Image (cartoon, rainbow, N blue to C red):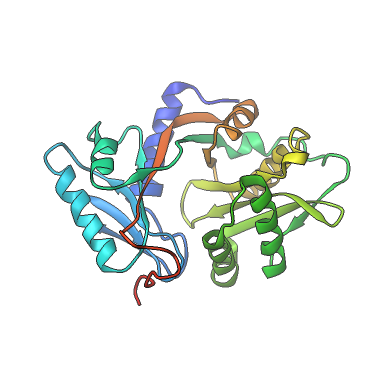
Length: 278
């Protein structure tokens, strides 16, 4: 059952507080800190760097953007992200980020649902499909194989992140691959930070030849049951345009739109970037 608008607004405020303003690192090796009017994460090596939350206005925004560019550039972080939400202020923050050299990536819809509702979804796999829980590098490689076909790109940073979580904090990760015989056809993960109200659904992708058969829905139901068993009240997704209609049919409501703004220093490539903290 989709939440009513008043409930969605309360959940959005809770999300902003827990997952942005008071965010926890997304890996044991990462660090989250508040610096002035922003909350940012830095991670050694291939991990994610970026701004998670900000409290800016027309007077302070440009100087704070410049300060964060200088901070991450000085650390040799390579490209980093400013994760902008539609209700962030000032209203023209996206334009200011573009003027400072950031490039927007495709917008995503921030969606949320009650875990208890989704845990009731049927778990009968489509014919020929079995689920493999990912616990090791071989399973992660199967996930990456699916992602390459589903999204058309290699994702070494995501591979590194999943392997790091499996090694350091396996209790915060639930990853799964849908198999058609010996062939991986869909994959997804769920990340859960201790003490928070939201489990994040990430990386849900299906081989184009297997779309429309209920595999994606199965992976959502699988992760929802895990979250429900752990007492996590909400599931959260940054949904693509392809995923949003499916999630809406499953009962997810919209909290807003988020756009990743990425800053890439001149001359930076992954091969010549000095790792953060090095």
